[in-house]
Length: 142
Length: 113
Image 1 (cartoon, rainbow over the protein chains, first blue to last red):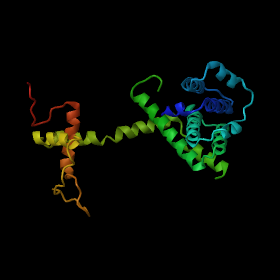
Image 2 (cartoon, helix red, strand yellow):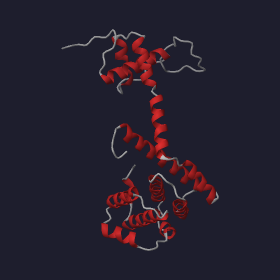
Image 3 (cartoon, each protein chain N blue to C red):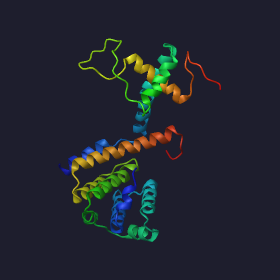
Image 4 (spheres, each protein chain N blue to C red):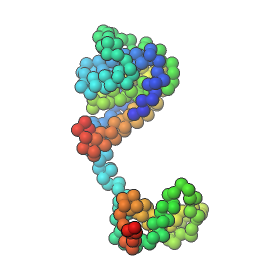
């Protein structure tokens, strides 16, 4: 998926994104290996150092709605919704608590419910297509 | 929209990946239109050099889109369309596929220079 938006994020926005991702990971009380890998890759892509990431993971309680309200850029808000949808769906399971985080954050940023539905559908189609491609190309991580 | 309603919609969109991937694979395997058309072409119609050239010309950016030709088949059309007949288009597509694959066509020759 397109990662060009990361260059347009401020350092504060990157930290907010990571905090919200962390909340999403902890939402279903299960931490999947793919979710951890995803968070590490995201941190790497965002250029956020390991200590900061560890600090975020260790923070006991993060008010993700309050954090989401700080994202005032519409394009960045949509990207955050997209990334949250990827994280929520990538572990092949969709918990109610994960949906709460996605919906509450999206609404806090002023993203319409219809847009959330569209983005989620697009993300699912992309994930399915990617996994199908891995299977067809006989790649082990498919 | 009510939050529970939205959650329900998002849940209904979700499908276990194994099942979804299997469905996608079946779709890809069944929707092989061009392969079927090329297969029909190889078994039936002869191809001349000019039709292969036409195929290249048609897809070349330097050339304009071919002018409208009278359809040879009985195509029910309300307005004139700037397209070749169905059989000609089929030939063009099959020739394009063959050209991409480097396959020689029946009735064609290869210049060995």
